[in-house]
Amino acid sequence: MAEEEKDNKQNGDTVNDLLKKILYQGVGMAVNAKERVESAVKELIGEKKISKEEGKKIVDEFSSNIDNKTKDIESKIRTTINDALLKIRPATKSEVEELKKRIEALEKIVAGLD
Image (cartoon, rainbow, N blue to C red):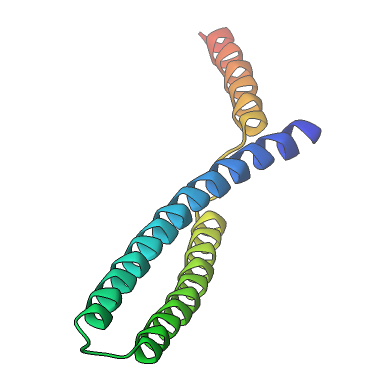
């Protein structure tokens, strides 16, 4: 039983690692987008097309929107992965080993019938 829990934990860690990678990529893209917005706003302020206050408001609203969307996407990804794992739970190492033993035992029985 401890072996099965260890296997399940390792499978979970792999999924968690994948989830983290996906989330980090998403956060990286969000940070990049925020930097581009900040740069564009600075340019507009420099060209006197908008005021500093308007620029700050744009950047703040964008940042807030990105944060909310990131949290929403993270939640959806977690739910999707958990649902998929529940539907197609991979066999643990101990379950595979148990099946191998049973197959070997059946092969010996069949061989003895010949």
